Length: 364
Image (cartoon, rainbow, N blue to C red; front, side):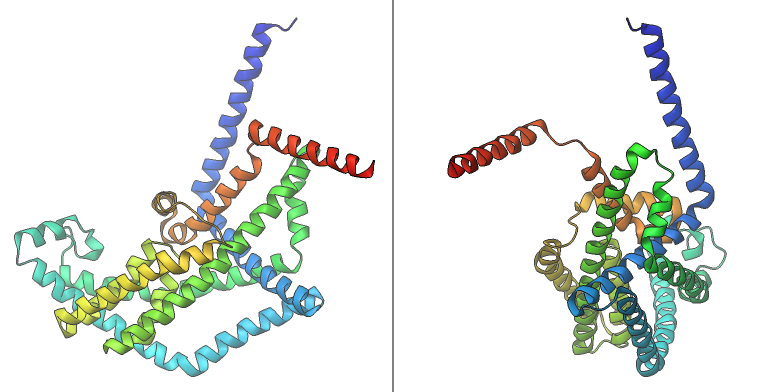
């Protein structure tokens, strides 16, 4: 007969173990959050390299190492060609964009300071953006955009680490997956292997969908701004495409610089630009996204926005950028690990039984 006290002690011990695990995970996230996000970005890039290489491997019957080499060299060549042909023009437009945004934000701050509701809005802004706690509002606003855009060297260093780590991960992913699975009990390694495969497929589908989405948004934004006569259409189109990597929030953020630049020309021009971005986002949300999500990952909008808010609050801008693939992994993990509903199991078993019965009757 089972001792009730022993059962209670076992339950308490299990709860304590889970609390310890959660505490260790929370401490690791707090202390090593930036490092873990960099590692995850490397994994994400490795999934991209591996997925593209696998397409070449299957389509052209090439050895995987040769397919991976072609993918990496093609990426480096495209970046080099972009820097060679469009780099000077893009760099010049980015520099003009920094200057123009600084000037427009100064004018906007001065306009808001003349009205009561405008002063209320300024009081809610942080000091770095010209809020009421700053000593020189215009100077802070003018230095905010160059400060953000001027951190490119730190970003390039992180991107280099992500590139190298992702390349090593993509060369031999089984080595790293098998090493991670050794941390699990022997009886759970099969489940861990299936979960790792499911997460890899999920990230690949999400990346492929986002790449198509970003490319379409960037082209439509740049062409539309050029047709409207807005200055710096190339830089603004590239910015809109890159920011669209962050769903919903990135799309809204990408429209703000274009509207501010258009506002310097005339309020009507700013209105036309706002309508352009609204039409593009309407097309993306109602036409492009449903087509992409047939083959990619379909995440609920509320879950996506809440995850961006939560992870961004914890880890800042890197967390905001990587929040959506993280939540896509979490959703895929829950779907893979949750037990199937009993009615579905019974229905499948009944269908299998009927099929076996038909096969037996046919054989007889």
